[in-house]
Image (cartoon, rainbow, N blue to C red; front, side, top):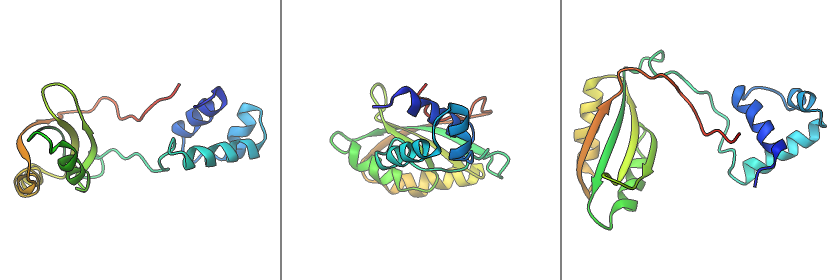
Length: 148
């Protein structure tokens, strides 16, 4: 469970993942070793998955961000989700409740690449019954899980 200090450390790391432990410690009024130990513990426990750069795909040459809803044969949802999660184009994937079994966000460079992804990659995964694809025309917020 996260306490208030952990949440404050995460806040500063989410604002700038390059921020040093000593700077965070100074802001929070705690020893640098406290920040270092707590971050190490959050990494070990999977609270912090990894440190990575958040890129804007549109500025990096990717023109298509799509949300794809996937309907799957009964009893194959986990198996299909695991196969989909292995695909490089998939940014976010989750098993869902409601009208569709799986939702995923996919980023590709062009409509042609999206077509190839849908036909050549999804089309070869056994258990997928149907898909529904929505292309985002703009993105108003790029984010990540907030804990505060």
